[in-house]
Length: 186
Image 1 (cartoon, one colour):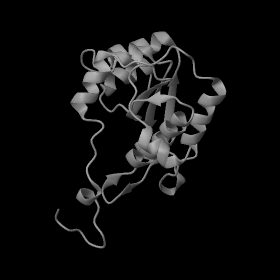
Image 2 (tube, rainbow, N blue to C red):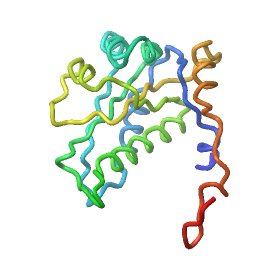
Image 3 (cartoon, rainbow, N blue to C red):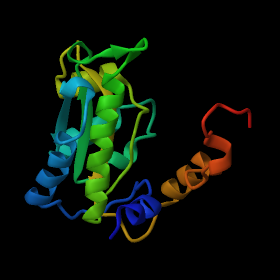
Image 4 (cartoon, helix red, strand yellow):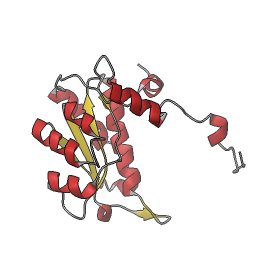
């Protein structure tokens, strides 16, 4: 499959089969993230790969207010994407660890999709609670996390509602976001 096919067809998965991800496939997904570019090649990222079902359930319970991330409990793997801001650059008053980690995590997500493994990028979590559950040092920032697993054949009511509310299929037209040569008000 061509890379654009993957991009067009990928969607946020919130319902997973119980099938485990084979170790060699998981290793390839992690390798895709490891090979990502970063500012001055500082590679400020760290990833916690959680396969222990009890820890995954704790993440689901303690990662956000209420039960909003309860669907994590069904995933065979959750990857928590962290960064050390002190090992990164600040350019134009912007911390580059956010960009560096995002590039790495997106490469993992696309590599996973290549194997038919779905994910759901999550930025909504309670960082202090999650740090306690996973024993993450104070100076490390959690930037994102995602469940990984083979998509279930049917979407749950929860998944359908979240997709509808988030309007996740809607994208702005190219004409609304692309400027050529100079910025033009749209």
